[in-house]
Length: 165
Image 1: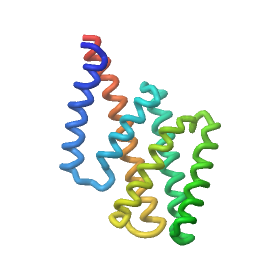
Image 2: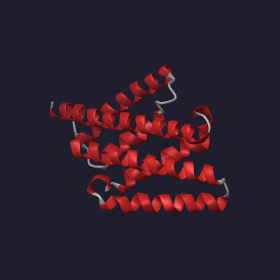
Image 3: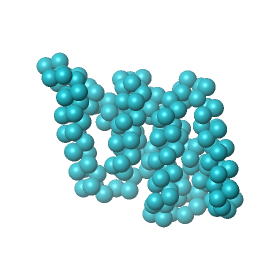
Image 4: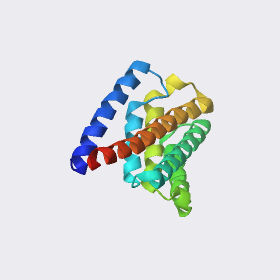
């Protein structure tokens, strides 16, 4: 079996199982869409142990930057200009931090940032109000992204075994 076919079969089966599990569990801290973002982020960072580390740390960093921007914005007062300023400053910080090797995976940091902002914009009320609610949003995203990175690592190993057979 070639690599692409192996990846398709393994990730398809695993993706179906984890989707079923996420729906069945119904936990607001296991967001299937964010799991798949983390999974893709793992492969985007090249896979293996280094890809896992780079992806997961950058996902976390992005979520932290987004949470900081959201906490600042909701504390100051939400207006279009303040949203632009808070996002702009937080993105500058997010990207400048990529000078550190541990935070160099800018796209993966953006995945963490964007998924955190998306959940806040679409479902923040389910997690509570104020800074504590924003922190819960970021936690839900980070946990889901990490699960996705772990599934990426597992799918890579399983695919390697299947392709070698």
